[in-house]
Length: 315
Image (tube, rainbow, N blue to C red):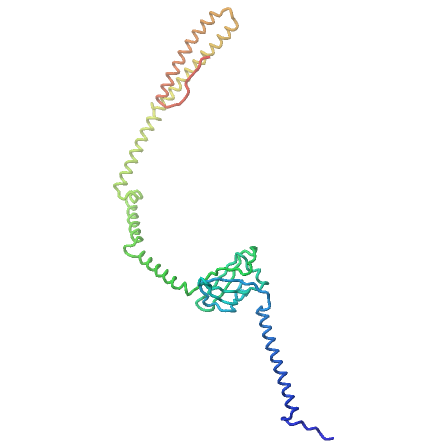
């Protein structure tokens, strides 16, 4: 049996075999590319149900299509397109997967932060997760935080601060004037009359105040002696009160006699004339006692202003 020899490479059979292998390889490569594209599209959420959100800003510098919008550091949306509105503002249309849309509420806040170095970041903040969900196609104004835009304002504020500091520390500034005045007041307070000199401005004025206080103390001492001293108003008032007590004792005794006579008059109805005579005499005695009481009360009121009801009614 003779061994078979391979056909030459330029034979039709060899060419057909190479073509089949090339076609299989192309199909395999195409399948791999398509599979990779489908996987990437799936991973990027192309086949997921999306909810649109429109963010409005003064400009969209630094924002590119495909940029993520993050919530607590996790991407929950992606910029699909950027368009210019009729009012000159930038509208950024963002696709948010419905499985992540529950993180966005009606009270959510959206920011676009651009630092000095690095790319722009779009972030969402939801402080109250119990608020109603953000509706489909909602439009929200984005808050910008541009560090580069803040640099001129910071420089201007620093310049203003330095100018104010220079004005405050100048030789004719209000602080130096206040310190000079404080030094003057401190020097005055270390003088003869202490704080009075510092407050009033000179020792002469402080001396006048001290003299006035001394005269006031002397007048108070004299008044105290006149009122509470020997033979003063209080002594006279006490004597008058003592006399008043004596007269009231006499009045009490007279009234007791009146009561006794009335009892006797009721018991002895036949002797009514004698009882009436006794009653007249007793009434005259009571009137004399009452006049004494009135005189003493008037004297007490002259010496010390007591406000009392001095009326005494006869039975």
